Image: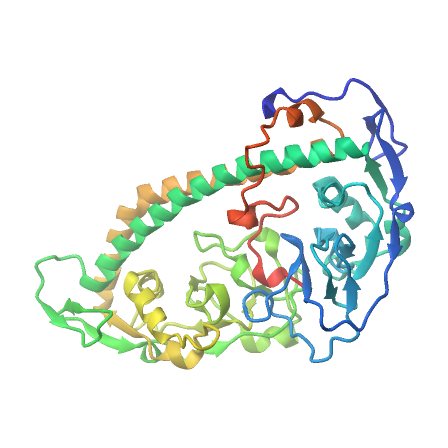
Length: 469
């Protein structure tokens, strides 16, 4: 059905150079004619809403420490009220796509814009304004000294031309995109499930090698630790604090708002690729005087201390310049005379480490593993020579698995890119979906809500700390 889509039969000039020709039955109005500013406040009883480039507007969890690292003030009386259907824009990050339609009545940061949005179908309006061409146009309407400090210009925003198909056509576009997104989302999740199974296979390979060694006939001894079990008789168990230089250190509690390439990179969880390298497109930096106490080096291991990623470890590989780490990460600098950084990191990828992590949680509170708990992590340890042999063996065994995972991840990236282009072409009138939408069976589910992180179109980064309260 998607492959059969064709352009509209007749177009007209939109009057906008960047929009070009649009379907002849579509209207074009400046955004200022469709919005009215809202200033209602003093409703602290309403739920707190957040705006993120990945998710649009959503109800913020007050208990998930990983969802947002910004502090919620005690006094919310000055927060703006956003009614269901209102357009909410983070003016500092509109150039990233941080905007959307409020799903319910709630309150948002006083720094945000809140507007009544007069459009026939709010779902269409959200897809339009969060599409790639419009996000770029919001970027053009923003200005500032540097990208990370851009601010949305009111006069520039008000002049943005908004495409207005007939109301029934807006509904058809929403129906088609829900259906198409559901199909693409299911394809992505199917590939993710395969990746998950392959990663379990990798974990089993690592677990066996890092907790039992390479010789299956070697004598074993009790480790004295229930979740670890027996280990080779010639190995020892040492606490993490005895295997690192200095202490475990927390990172900088600062907002990721700067992109100055001359400053130290500000490393966050979302900067890491699955292979451990750092993404170039998520670069953020901190001023040198702020970053100086939180510097990291290749070979350092960063541990997540709270929220959904608690207990996850990241090995810093190569750096192109100076770098520091975020406050929700804990830095461990391995003592290379005792443990190879890659070996210590490999242990954090085992089932034994997962069992230790689970055993540390206090179920009565938010999951959290502080530096004191990580310091007491027991690590099974052979000699440096045997560590190197284990690492080489694991590398060889995992090579075909890694190749398959890389291929699947690339396929997922291509599906996401295709979805972004499809949405942009449909909402701007490059493709006519009216007939296709009419053929979608009523009984077919349009959108699978089981995995919402793959539904958003503007950005597919898994960026929990990029949400703004």
